[in-house]
Amino acid sequence: MAVLNVNPTRMEMTKLKKRLAVARRGHKLLKDKRDELMKIFLDVVKKNKELREQVEELLTQSYESFLVARAVMSSEVLEEALMFPKQSVELNVDTTNLMSVSVPKFKYSETSVDSDNIFPYGFATTSSDLDYSMQILASALPLMLELAESEKTAQLLAQEIEKTRRRVNALEYVLIPQLEETIKYITMKLEENERGNITRLMKVKDMMLEQTYKYRERLKTPQ
Image 1 (cartoon, rainbow, N blue to C red):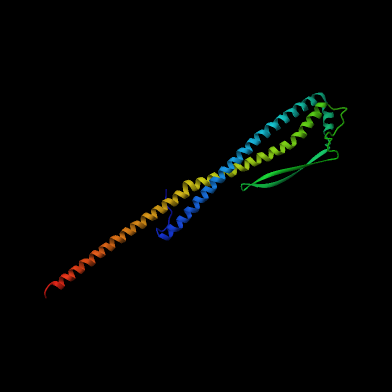
Image 2: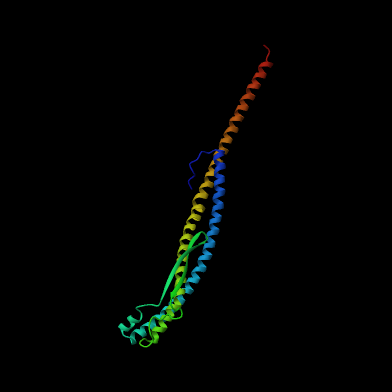
């Protein structure tokens, strides 16, 4: 692991130690966030699977009934029966914060003259299979919207998990080892300089002792 390009001084080492402490704390927080996101993501995926199975079952029943109605009714009568729907749906999209991820929240409201009557046609010329198909579609609408909300939430959570995972890996395998190596390098340099200073001081001391000894010897020697 390459060390950072810094001057090997005590001041730089102090700064790097502070950066290392912040990086370790950030790494722990990001790991905790990633783990919590994974728990939420798995719950959303489980819910998503259940909703999809329900929606697919309802849509299958609706399509089967519609195919039967289409077989027993003429195309002109079928098109005329479904030409002017009695109900309309207004969808409002809001967002909520989920572990710093903005996920959608769908709210819908139905507008109609008679909320209990969803059939835009009379029953004289239409098949009961068409009635059953429309009833199932009406009951599937809330689940379809909930499924869309759940799938989008899962997609956004997956993107955030991947982003957090990359940050955790960058801290764990790049930045933190780099800071540790740089601190180790500066420590070795400082220890090396300190040993060099001690060696020089010892040499100076030996020289001073030698000079002192020679000076005393000269004083003892008769002139």
